[in-house]
Image (cartoon, rainbow, N blue to C red; front, side, top):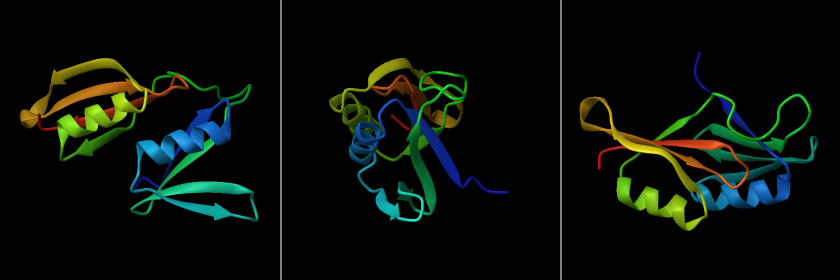
Length: 116
């Protein structure tokens, strides 16, 4: 099996989609008219911004996807400039890498790994 999609639950899909398109500028927005739904495609991986509801709310609930970056400092600045708040780290991890977590404006966490 390989990862196919990550659903990010937000209270407002339009605001969430706009923020995540700016957060991941290489993502290609793909509208699916039969579902009235826009998917952000990142190299074949789907980042799906969906409506938070009673079953799955937005926010920190235990799962954090980590994105590997080749430019540690630029990535941290990028997320900070978009209004994401540094939530955890940075801290050293294995193989000379560091990791940290950012909290998006909707309370979800974005993990970042890279070589500082």
